[in-house]
Amino acid sequence: MGHGGDAIAELMTDHREVEEMFARIQGMPGGGQELRDLVDEITIELVRHSVAEEEHLYPAVREHIRGGDRIADKEIADHTRVEKLLKQLEKTDTEDPKMSPLLQQLMDEVSAHVQDEEDNLFPMLRQACTSETLNDLGKKIRRAKSLAPTRPHPAAPDTPPANKLLAAGAGLVDRARDLITGRGKS
Image (cartoon, rainbow, N blue to C red):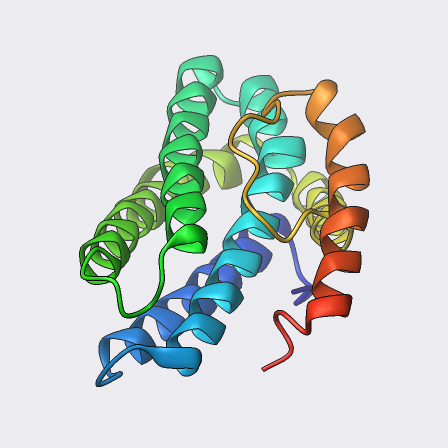
């Protein structure tokens, strides 16, 4: 969840972890509890990552990068599509024939988003920000991930200040639910 380093290093490590989870899904022979546990793990990581980006990365993009509003809005739209897919996956039984196409759609959406961030957004941010700014942003992102919700909330606000106010409360409720159910402990 928290890896250290500047914002870009932190987020790229998250990207690699999610790619590894996707590879594990692709290598699974079927559904069942093992798939449910892995989908829950992916959901937890993607939701935390998205909340942290929406709370801290995209406001920095708006502030430091020319045309940052357009870029941040596009990235948030990507997150909205992914969050809706995660909500569908949460409600879909692993043996349901819809599970495999939903997972593929999720992997395609996330992979395209990751590639866009790494090829375009991150280089622009590195050029526009000092190392001190990126390190401070990395600390904020790690803190946000530690408090973020663990379940998709597609109707929740995705821009400051409302997202920062509501995410901590939703995160607390989600983590309590996870503790009671054992979700995410595999």
